Length: 566
Image 1 (cartoon, rainbow, N blue to C red):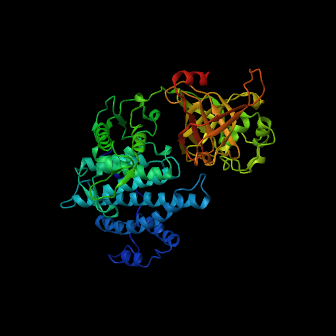
Image 2: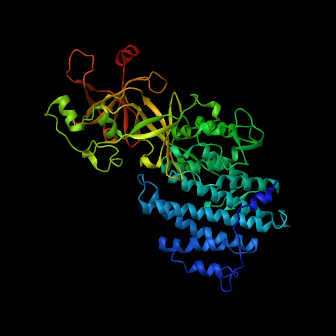
Image 3: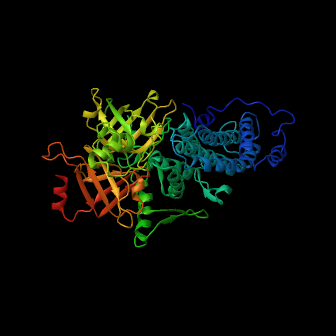
């Protein structure tokens, strides 16, 4: 069995002595080279910095010299990555190729920095894996920085909704175990890039585990940065212990895997050797939320000496709701393997629910030619680049597992699936050729992950098992109804989250909403074929994902609610 030091050194590339005249040959070469970088031109500087960092990882150096050089490089690299982040964050998916490459380059910067610091730790403790006299702080610094940059590497992958690169989790486990074995895992190290916030190896490791438990694949890019900051603040309250309790999340440090992004990934064939305990941090968070419950608005969290992270209490609760082992989820998950046809976006779903009728014709069939039309009703137009004239195409997906609350799906590379968090999705059993006769369930994409070979995995929350195509006109401040937009009427599922009738519309409807007019076709069994038209004066917006709005009419009492659902 390999020692923790041998595990730490595993995978380090072959190295050669620096060439005479190289920037790494003397103590002043690297600082002078950095002073000549065109930092004002981010792209040009990045093209020079990344090869220099990779070259540094391939030369033999004294551990202390390497550590000092990396500290200089990471300051310059942080500026390049920050510039790239501003171009990647907030972009719609799928990303344009140029921005995708910027995101991948940022991830490679952090991966190379993590490797460099790991090499420095190996060199400082050579040849037997022991800390030399008065070298405890440099070793702890190298290990803490390596773990922190692997965390940044993972974050840049999350921002692209791509799964972790091979070996990154194993490297994290190896770094933590070695730090623990030499007794520097609890030594605080200041970081000048974080206003000198001091973090230990254990806290940096817990930070990455806590972010993974929060499942960043279900967050927007901005929310990922908020979650990254929050989990850094909360990490000191987490504990990593030997053994595994039923209420703890297991950690297998001999496998290239994290704690699991979703509960079904937290099952182990045998009891894991370590557990990640979040009970203390949850108590601390609940205490903070209780103390600020009487205040309206956001709440701030901060580490000593660090910047505040300000978010809403609702975001905090949504983040912590996933910190549970597989056994604690509300609905049991069942293995699957069958296939479903899927439609992405309100536009495509409405088209099929309306018996393959375009929206303009749908409205005329309901209300006649007197209703004026505009083009503002389009939703998920990024999925069907051809716009209105293109018939939406159902994509075949594989069900990885399922439960009462929804599905975990995977689209193959050949499907060309385009998806984003918060988008609507239609689901139907694979059937015959007559799409008009199929019954479509309606769900929402809650998390998303792209695999290295191009497959797309998604977590789907089921919103309704029955739905009908509709049209909605929202009233303006003067009481006049605007042009109609697509809508989907969802039938109640009678569970805790979806127990009354609701309406889905494009997100533009949420702007200045006062009342709406809902139109849909008559029920098939009704005596009259006349369209059903309802004016609703009291509407609650219960969800706005940016892709759609879910509206719920206010109902005065339970009897009315039961009648409305009947």
